[in-house]
Amino acid sequence: MAEHILIRSFDLDRPRKEVFEFFADAGNLELITPPELNFRILSDQPINIRQGTLIDYKLRLRGIPIAWKTEISVWNPPYSFTDRALKSPYRQWIHRHNFTELSENRTRIEDEVRYRLPLEPLGDLFYWLVRRELDHIFDYREKTVAEFFAEKSIENNE
Image (tube, one colour):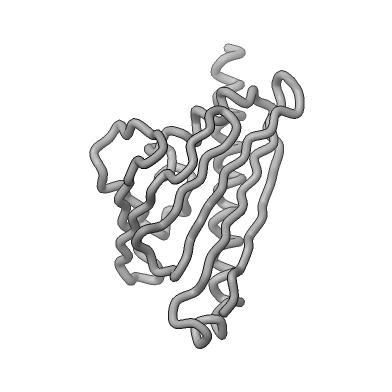
């Protein structure tokens, strides 16, 4: 039975506090998730994020509806937070978000996802497919976050 780890990071020319606040707004999850997943937050918004907050979502993966429920298990603004799936298609899903201040106006966003596939050990036969999907989701996320903050910079300079 294998625990898989996905680690991604990228740098953004924005202050850590601003970047953290963007990720702390659960409403932004819909913006940074690929549209083909039809990701929707079911919990009433705005959501006051803190340790113990529960968030319900729904999405479609290859046309299959999926219910997802996470708990914010660690809340350490503006440095990090961790969400843990209580209900998902994964046997385990623990996603740690880290925000490192590289300079006054530059932040490194680091994601570490520890996950286990369903139906272990049989589910591990599909690791390559799941990993490809996760890479696509995190590639989209990085691109969308960078575009969001680039547009925000343009608006602030006008």
